[in-house]
Image (cartoon, rainbow, N blue to C red; front, side, top):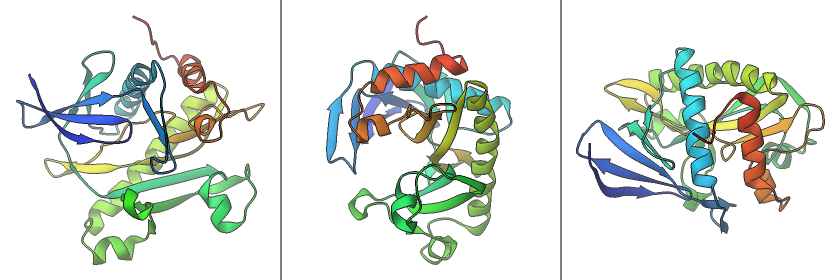
Length: 238
């Protein structure tokens, strides 16, 4: 399999075509961004850490019967993934209040949510990723009703698996976002899962161990990511 042209360059990852129509190469860069790209920095080792962290999580989800786009690790900062037809939708589950839900609803940070909340957002940075609902999705043709239902089911299945995994490492899975796509007609998880796209707190101290350390200028971003990985068994060194 040969690496071809760059197809897409996101805020922290690049996607490359290959000579296999069903496979892509996902390159995790050292770029770190927040606030829709308004704050950008390069953090040494970030690409490697997120690549290996994501591979570990995807393998855990596959073991639990959740189909993902992940195929294999290719290099320190690259993974081979399935070529999906992506939905322009972000699925967000919240187990504890933090971030935008606090601002929108006037709720203090740190309240347990039971049952967890589920929200859809349109993936469009130029619009600020606005919140949408199932009527929007169906009316504007962003996904079929059956695909919407499957995305919800899979997002909550991920919650069950990862809440338990992080709790074993003494951490709370506060919230996270996922994206999905179609692979040969099947809805498949088509997103990374790293501390870039979720919130994780230490269970006892509620120390933030995710990208909020970058957003809020707390420092120690990559050290926190590595700490999360070590607690759940990720091996960053061969």
